Length: 230
Image (tube, rainbow, N blue to C red; front, side):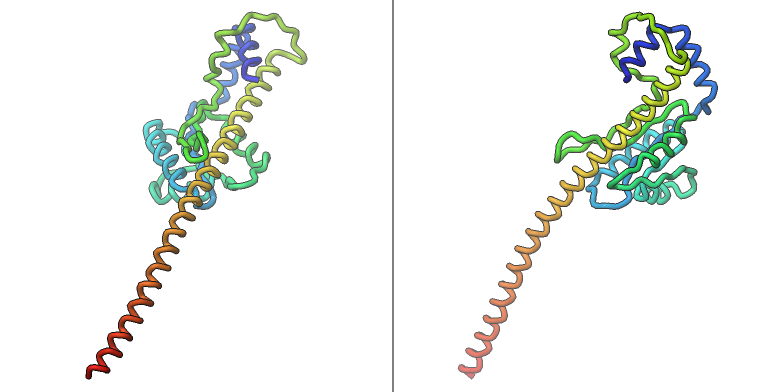
């Protein structure tokens, strides 16, 4: 989709630039920083690491804060109790497209939208990153583009507008699912560590019970020996 859109922009530069200016004129000339958190805990330190990256850039950008997930809302309000922000509920498990569309519609008026989220590397490693879904970074495809004459139906502006919306929505949805994958991997790692710690605690508890049992036996034996000599 991105490659086709790049081809379209390259082949009709003047018309695409005109359309881009028309789109920009409808924007609010602001940046939105979106913190993708979670509704519940047991994700290790992933959400806290995303939050640290988010607040550093958010304060530098002086952007509008958008928080996804109850945990993130709590972190933000605890750290910045007097700062304005926009909150959207974001389930940890199943995410409805209607909820995603609601967030996308809210973000569309912004010139730049930066998403702060977890990135899956492998089952034990999840990075924290930010992604720009504003459509102003189309990637290396433009270097391979060739000018192509195209017949449009219904019109060029309609297609450009369609691609703008589809790419924007697709990038946001992909980012949310990527964040979910990182969170679930982090939860598996956290639960595995917790399980190992519980096993260690169980062994220590069994050992402590054994030590206490022997201590009581020794105490009874010492008491019996004491009475015998007495």
